[in-house]
Length: 550
Image (cartoon, rainbow, N blue to C red; front, side):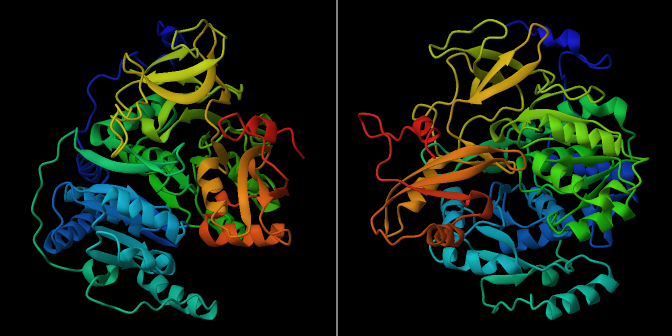
């Protein structure tokens, strides 16, 4: 398929990406630290880190990690929300040449166990309040050291005093018994160990980013420094006319452990010298709005759910939007009504893009200054796409088929899943997204449906097989089938169909069971009890028929 979308590109943009500016993520940080030096890089809880301090603290952490035995390619897991400890931990790991594994801090022990064992992580940074879920997983893992972080870490002296007091009165204080395998972040960040430079190359693995698998267990996309930095440059080139280097303030309310926020907020806006305002808990709307009132923010990234949450608040509507330039919607589809209301209130557009964990993530973006049009935009630089039918043949414009993509941001494969076992690529090297899309005559892409049964709940990927496997571990559940149902706030909510073993089983009992073993966004909102699940002749659940059941 010809790259016909190039004629629709913004005028400043060439077809090809060319050479990327940085070979590794540390090169990116070092370059920004030199150029932006004393400018603010990250903000959280009334405390800030400059670009220079971000580099210095990261290198200091790296020196201690090297003292502990971290070497090039060592696997380091990070289980942190959006706090100042996240970027320091991330870049400190990269200074060592390590491979990072993002772990959602909302995960339950069952989910953490799989990630640790599959990734072969040897070290983990975890916020103290999430340690109880991690603890049962330590024994059978390869973990050598657990570094305990606290909310007060890296905050200014005043906030270091205030936060523990607030937590005490809220009864949120966490006490973790020290042992030979646990170290507190605050005890190591002031060390004076010497740092040894490590040679890292473009094709070294930077990130094992886990995504849902159709077999019910998460698989890790293998993303190199080149994959991630190619995407960083693709995005930064796209938005270049709309930003001023060293002057932007971006609201980072999406978690940095999510690939969208990781690449776009943490790395791309680091490249252009922006201040990342880290929001640890955007659902605490009062605190979130206080930050928005304080900061003259210029850019925001969010999912449809978060845009809607803000739109419900009168205090949000009363904010000063004079510095606000644009928003970017990712993780899930932005709905037309949301985009319309957002523009009415803020005077700015929500620019919708599209991507996947396997593609670092950005594949396509709409023009920043264009109004919402329902499409997922134009493929970014050096990105080729094709739409194929069930036979693998390329099909014509405006006909729906599976979207396939090729580009420098696309992963090499899945960790521990050789291509000959479960090949996610076409014979000519295109990654098969599993999404059904169409392309217009002028190159705009539109998502029609998903080939896979994946559910997108509040911007997160949820795979029915995982939930069904978990539900059937309940002693009173014989079988389970799970589907997504359209929801204007979440994108989709989860509905579970249950065949009981025990007639007395209630929907509340099922929900409670799910909350014990599943991350919050994976918990079904609605439980339907039925006598039998619709199935094929070979016993596969017919989810399309479940959608017709009440």
